[in-house]
Image 1 (cartoon, rainbow, N blue to C red):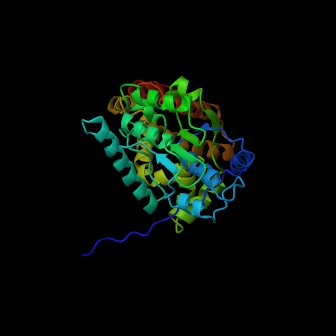
Image 2 (cartoon, rainbow, N blue to C red; image 1 turned 120 degrees about the vertical axis):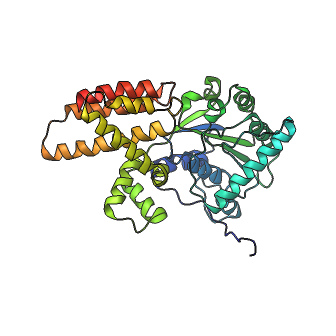
Length: 359
């Protein structure tokens, strides 16, 4: 059997965010776009895709703000082949003992990720232990000091920038990036993205211009699912997936991977709560204390979707809503706390006790 032949794909279109794109294009066209920016928004709303769009606009030969999509530079960016666009994403921590070999290993790992994304532009969230290790930031430093290869500027995108701190015991990588941000070369634009800005060092945040990326409407999510994911999805499944996405294109993708498991966990938790007598305590005891950013958060998301569905049905039937509204707010509050240092077992125990009273 001969070698497998892959057909390179381009980055897919941006769905929604029209007002944001208009503002970004205006800033690029007027040369007012900041040299170092931080795209902030919920997980999966398209922050990295927007950063790449900005990079395309900055490198575009037309110099009109919004990328023309036709020139050589635009095509290179869309194919993730532009020599002056450098995209750093969380990767496994290099294992080589020599620091120089660690940088080489990090660059090889990044090259593998980019090769995968050329084949499949829709990607999943980085695995829990993947990070921006010091070796990756040293590679970034080298890219920054190099002269642009074919234009007047270069663009560096750092996705999931919160992984600079969260996944490393020390702040070496964050401090190394801070040195780049303090005096970036005039020909370099740095674009960081994060769903957890509080996880970044305050000294890093202070050197970045924040750009808020909001969620998109349900109609945009439905259009994305039917065009890019599953055109044959029936109406009920489409609506369920749209609700689970909560205005996030990325979550619409991830729903197929994690949604069934999370929804089942949420359904089990609701059943235990509604049986009373502290039935939820078993779920709290089973909850692993380290999963606040993974399964626990996904279960809370699915629980919120189920409560919203109940709320909608009660609204239509004219039933009393106050207890359900309070329950939904508690779930959303617990979800926010789960992104910090909250203990998932304790958080679920408190939530279960309150929901038993309310539901």
